[in-house]
Amino acid sequence: MILYPAIDLKDGNAVRLVHGDMDQTTVFNDDPAAQARAFVDAGCEWLHLVDLNGAFAGEPVNAAPVEAILKACPVPAQLGGGIRDMATIERWLDKGLARVILGTVAVENPDLVREAAKAFPGKVAVGLDARNGKVAKRGWAEETDVMVTDLAKSFEDAGIAAIIYTDILRDGAMKGPNIDATAALARAVDIPVIASGGVSSMGDLTALKETGVIAGAISGRALYDGAIDLGDALALLKG
Image (tube, helix red, strand yellow):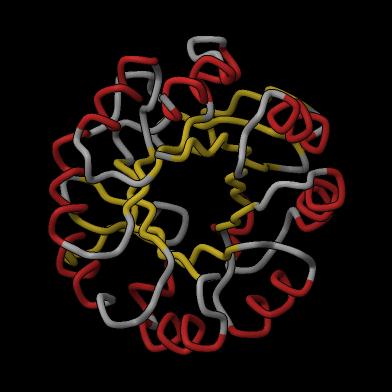
């Protein structure tokens, strides 16, 4: 199971939100590239980046810090937030991003997901963010009637690299991930599922790993707060 340290970008800073609320922001580092290097120095194999402003604006906003991270770090990075057309997908991949995460467009324009996954094999992931099992979009601001599992299954034949499943009510709250829902999703599809939202302790990582079906976990606040030691966590997941 791969651990993805998360760097959420807002107004050029590395931040964390609570429940995806842009008004509940904690700035952890005003130099995101330095934060990314610290994660890499600790041994991480991937980075998970989110352009929070972009998720609301519908286009990239924090391009400068993302590009700085890509230049500073030798490990692959995935990015979500405001990526909603082929031109933006191509531009990010050309800049060295290993994987784009498509969230809102997965609901509003699933054909784009299929087109992108076909054009860029292994480089397109789908971000499914949910409240009570239903998908939310546009920076989590809008809820839909679409069930997460139904949407995930619709991409089974699309060739996407991964599904990143976030339980919004757990995100940034340090209350633990929704292991049952994440594992159920992972068992329902053949696509690798990455858990996000609420991963806040070594116990959480152990429980996710022990499901035997979850491919990865994303953690942010717990790494910044010191609740999870990145080196210890990486050793645990490799053991």
